[in-house]
Structures are given as structure tokens and as C-alpha cells.
Length: 440
Image (cartoon, rainbow, N blue to C red; front, side, top):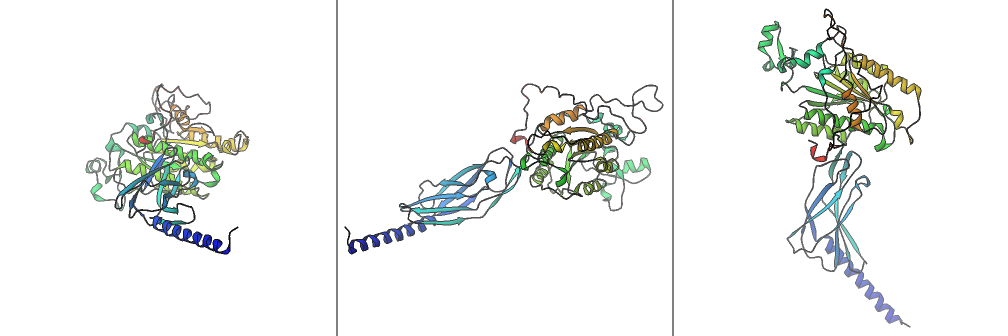
């Protein structure tokens, strides 16, 4: 048996080991400094994003195990523990880990920390390295079918058809308003029309497209990433990229205001729009009404609306707020199909309200398509694109049986997807979704 002296010796030895371990752990935690790390990360939902950290070795970490920890939310896969390879003092080491999120949003990465422990596991030390950085996970962007906008009739006579065939200069000229820059006066049109005319589009031939998103909290159903709001955001993001690639200047309208764009080039502007969608949160119940009022002050030549749970009263103001002669398209979400598991519950009243709203828009010359839970965004958009392919217009007044726009506006029989005509088969090799590299 051990005597008191032996026990005292063992106790002293343990205290010495703990003290030495604490010193080693402390020195190990101070052996590294953060030199740089990835900043302002932007990645599409579902795509991996590499996160790189560069640390510099200040001194050798004798008798210590050293790792670098980088904090991350659970939605990004959680934090990472990165081993540090041996380096001479003054040298750097590059560390990397990958984060992936299936959900759009704006997240915080970090701060990183160096954690050190002695070889016997008796002591540990931790020291923070730098601060946190932001990562924006953009909504999923899908490749969409081409649109033939010339087939879309307007609710205000034949101005839509005229706009689709007029010269770029004509499409970008309007009457002078108090406060307009006099450098934008278009003298040739001023002389021809007898009133001061100015350019409303600084880039002729590349008209503005307004993307109206219904972001009201009460207009959507379903939990989290599987909600109708997420489907609407993905539809809006896909439409923005698609229209940008067709030469449109796209602006996002939600929560009662057009997004401010400070970027000089359109690719950066669309990327800003996607980041706005990544950070979007459900809005108040008057959001759609305020957005429609803001739309009345816009000068867009194309309008795309992505709507949640709406009725006739919600969409009626869109008819008068729609810019003169602008083609208009609407995707209406049958939100009750996103409500809970099974998504097959029936709500005849909700269906009737939505169908009535769609009919109001279609009669006013809008192309419309109804989306339900489980339907891919490209499939719904293809129905929207096909809805005007077989449009038949009433003969113009005075035209002997010839086709032409009617005085009260074009009537498009193909302006809805009520018949649910199945989409045309996708050509072989055509991808179902846009790869991350195609996002501007």
C-alpha cells in the first residue's frame, strides 16, 4: 500500500502535469494568427461553397494538439474542425472546408478560433481568430423556356402590339415631366410631335422589366423550405436571370418598393437582385397593395407578377397600374396545395377565388399560369410561354375578317392554363436546372 509520502508525491506529480499541460495549451493557442479568410461569399442553394482560411504560425506548439474551428449554422452543415499541418515559425498554412445549404438566406460564418490541448488531455485553451463574415445563399435558378412576347395582347387597345414592333427609340421616349434632365430631351421627336419628349430608357432596345413578387406572409402556405413562398422566390429568381439574358434590365418590386440598384452593369444588378431575394423575409399584409401603387409610377415595358393567395380584389388594381402597352405575365400559386403533408386537401372557396383572379387577368390580356406544389418551376413557366402560342385575336374594326387587335384590347383564348395542356417534351440533353456557373 502507498504511504502518505507516496500519495503526496503522486499528487504533486499530477499538479505539475496539469500545470505543464495548461502552459502547453496556452502556448499552443497563441501559436497561430489568422492572416486571411474568404469574404462576401455568394452561392446558389444546393451548391457547395469552399471556405478558405490562411493562418500564420507564430511559434512552435510544443507538446500540444492544435486545431482551428470555424463556426457555421446548422443549415450550412455546422462548424468545421481543421487540423493544422506542421510549419516553421513565420510560414503560413492554408485550410479549407465546404459548406452547403439547401435553403436560401443570409448566414454568418465564424468567427474562427484556435483550440489547443496538451498531449494528456488535462488542459485546454481556446482563442478567437478574427470576426464573422457573411454568406448569401441565392435561390435556386432554373433554365426557362423562351417567350414570344409579341403574342401578348394589351388591355389598352393595340399599344402592346405597337410597342413590340416599334423602333427602340420610340419604345424609350415619353413626354417631358417636371424635374426630368434636359440632357435627355429627344429633339427629333419633340419637333415631330410638337411637345417636349425625353428618353425614358437610357439604353434603347433594352427595356425595363419589372418583377412583382407577392411576399405577404398571409398569402403563402407550407413550412420553411417547402413553402409556397420559397417556390415563388425561386420562380422570381429564375425569371430575373432569364429576362436578363434576353437583354432586359430587370428590377424587383416587393414590399411596396422597387429595389434600389447602384451597380453600373446589368450582370451586377441582377446579382444584386438575387441577393435581395436571398435575404427576403415575409412582409405585411398590405405589401401587395403598396407594390401595386409603386408599380403605377414605373416605366417598365414588361411586367411579370408572381402571386400567392389572391382573389379578384387583389388583382383588379393591377389592371390599371400596368404600364401602358406593356406585355404582362402572371404565375399564380395555388397555395392550399402547399399546406401540410399530402398537399391534396381541397378548399373549393380558395380555388374559386384564385380561378376568378386568373380569369380577370386573362381577360385583360395577361398570360397566366397556375402553379401547384410539386410542379417544377420550368414546367409552370413553359405553360406560361405556351399559353400565348395559339392566341386568337378579334378582327380589328374596319378589317374585313382579317385578324387584328380589337379596340377594347386583344382577347387571348390561350391566356390561361386551365386546360392544363402538358408541356412539350424537353429536347434531349437540355438540363432541367441552371448550373451555378450560369448565375450572373
